[in-house]
Amino acid sequence: MTTPFTFKLARVFDAPLDQVWDAWTDADKLAQWFSPKGVRTFHSKLDLRPGGSYHYGLENPDGSRYWGRWVITEVNPRTSLVFIVSFSNEKMEIARHPMNPSWPREILSTILFRDMDRRTEVEVNWTAHNATSEEAQVFAAGAEGMGVGWGGTFGQLAEHLRRV
Amino acid sequence: MQIKAMQTFHALADPTRARIVEMLAASGRLSAGEICRQFTASPPAVSQHLKVLKMARLVNVEARAQTRIYSINRDGFREAQDWLKSVTELWAERFEKLDDLLKSQQAKKK
Image 1 (cartoon, chains in turn red, cyan):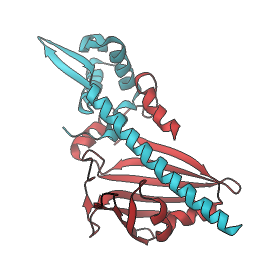
Image 2 (spheres, chains in turn green, cyan; image 1 turned 135 degrees about the vertical axis):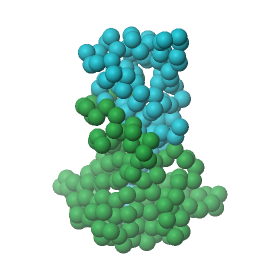
Image 3 (cartoon, helix red, strand yellow; image 1 turned 120 degrees about the vertical axis):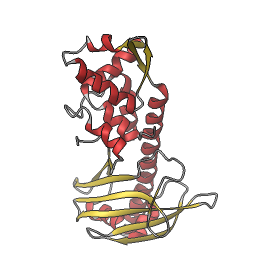
């Protein structure tokens, strides 16, 4: 198994670290921002500890509902939060993305928090988790030299990342 | 074959495979032999890279007599791009809302 592709993006928030950490680790606050735009959070339950979970229910503007969950693996207060995110159902069982079946079933999310003197940088890292054997084959082949060579044809793909 | 976008990017994150994709983007179509000649790596090693690119839906291959002809798989690229765009938009929306929440908390304190 080689190092898989990681989707990474960072943003600096104009708020102190304690407040940003709190926004990520308080169920009521998560409910206020973690859903996509226009999507209402009608259920938000967090058990913040390694082995714990976050279970959330979302409602689209058309009234359709779906669920998501985090399985929390690491909690390092004010430093990092690691969890496996997936779509779910109301019983917190794993499910496929309701609109896009090609979305990875489980994504390992590593969130890093950095104190920047009254401001806080948040870095999100997303890596596919638990690939199927077919996917694992793609991963396993050509193990040498990962992570470089963004240019030419896929420079424009990297461009999307810079725009955030 | 259902290969996910993250695996597509993973396939691209290798310098040899990235170079192959660039060559195909520039030339349109190349035979396996033409691709192999560009690399010091052994033909089986290059062939393995081509297999990964094909599985990741980044290249198409057609067999002509004894030759395999490779070209860019535009659908695969488009899917990967669409996925990246949707993920980027999702986080932009979330972070916008997080920013709003943090600002409203700051305002209350003042």
